[in-house]
Image 1 (cartoon, rainbow, N blue to C red):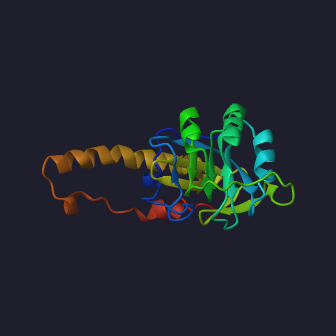
Image 2 (cartoon, rainbow, N blue to C red):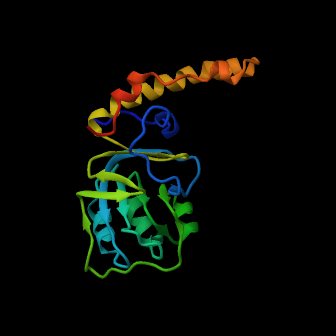
Length: 210
């Protein structure tokens, strides 16, 4: 069962993990949102949006749809129609290594989306290329269908399902300790006396995938 990641911050994971983080250019469309769930991967090259249409027709509730745009930096693959379909399907959100359109509608319906930005030029339902499932690359990170995706205001991280609970427990411990560190700084203690050092066992215990 997927652990509760509602209080886990990607920036905390970034204190002791080194792999699995997507490019910082992939950012939240709606500030202050956090999603997590199993990845449903989509490979979507060029102007052909058919694989994403199919994915949003079969996605399980709670899935995070991860879209590899195969280097396309022109076409938006998500807009009002597909965004509404995603919301009605019950997906947790989408992470897209590319662009979206109809920004005001996506924000109005509250669909959590992480992407590189916006474009008025859209993909079409050509039915010629792309696929659902398997291994894709999104924001420089390798993603398999079933990997755990955590996305928040700081970015997106991909986690091995077998190691997610352990990583989450370490992150929550770090966050609890940080409250005391903040108290000490506010009390006037110098940062170089307060800043924690990484425990070697943390780095070794939580690789994204062995």
